[in-house]
Length: 440
Image (cartoon, rainbow, N blue to C red):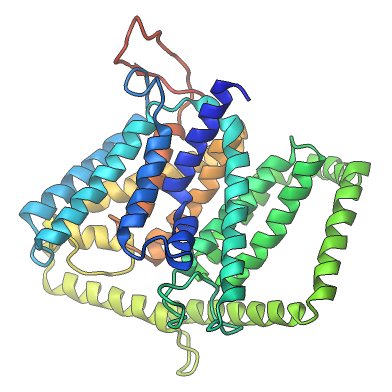
């Protein structure tokens, strides 16, 4: 392995740890006991940032997407200013220190990304596919060895000693499975036989994990992304080619081998089918309840508590806007109320300018993602565009506009997605200048 390839693998691991590393961090922190506090999480993120550093760091920077960069910079400066000067509910020294640390992590990660070459794309997806597979294995191992785990509950690595089985975060494992499906699929085309077997196995395992976690927002994002995939990839002229490719000798060997492994697993674990079906039934039922509750069509016994909470939050926001219509100009202040709908909370907290910058930034990300998927030129960017859909759905269904998981992914999109030109400068000619980005 040459030094350049090793650097790209190392940087790929760093990007993964920051943007998608929560499942592994939670497993090592909670299950293996490497530290129950946030210090281990911070250490994991810091390690990811350190792995991005190379000899080119702060010498050659690549130009980001200027439009989304300006919108992101405006929202960041606005929200940070609100934290200090318009903060009616959040002013505590410890919390302010933590919030400042979050901003520094986001900005530091973005600055380091500016020094990462787009040539990393060849090593990035194999790294993601392997690490997401490891994340799914960690989840299943945690479930299998937890004596308090009950078949039917949402799959997650639980916090503490496992006795409080509900205290985990299934969403990060659902997003890990989402990432595994799309990264592995994008690797299938140009992979050898062993990689294809691994990728197909990872896709199959990840679909099961996605169902076990019962994370409705990620499931919604998955079907949304699947629809976009079918729209841009299924063409009449490609159907015949796809059929011929599917029935090639190599693919038949792969499918038969995978099917044999699956059948063997089901034979060894006789009740596995019943378990998977029960999870499917439970997930589909709760998903339908959530949709009916959000639409106001659920009966008394069909109400979904989580969706009802968001409905109540939206009603609170509507009443507040009716009583204080002037809040639309400046908002109510930094993290005023947890709406669990980030797009609306950006308006509630920061007024029309916060709403415009945050909403417009996400809209441009969405359009650039569709264009990147349509053009089909760079699998690394295509993968992150699919991953973005989980966060695009999330701005309507859960979280806060300042949450770091959103902004770590936003930082990657600003750096790599939406660029259509290439122009670089030699170090000796412009040691501190911006080098314009590679292809979209």
